View 1 (cartoon, rainbow, N blue to C red):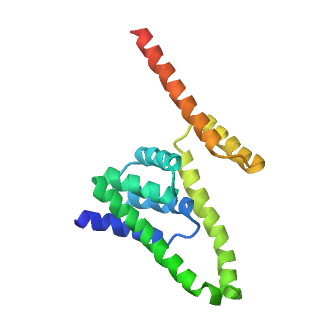
View 2: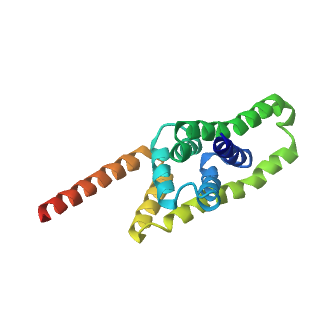
View 3: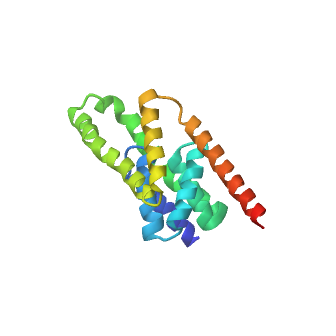
Length: 182
């Protein structure tokens, strides 16, 4: 029970102090579960992140659920999901209640404009950190796909599906080559 509470409060703190959405949360999740808590290693985190990105739903909640499940099974997944969802739910509820009265406040507007660079940094940070374990040619491909998504505005589903098919094909080819060598 104590470990489930630890999972819940770890993700609760991340959810409470992260602005900018799910991608901004990834850096904090990574730091908390790999570096501080040591629940999983970086390779496992990368695999969970790929699954979370490929699964329907918000990436932060998906990542939390997969990490919680990997660490403590179904109860861990549930604790991580609740820890991630509760802060956002409460904050959005409070904003909805008071939004009409603060919508035109210049200080609130200025605060949100001031947070934009920090949000960008929270998104770019994990990209740089996760790219360290990649080959240079994979980084070039990722940069090109990112640029193409931005420039032409097509759906990210296409490169994800293409990458999955290429990965399956390469793995099948390598497995076939290995069998032929025997």
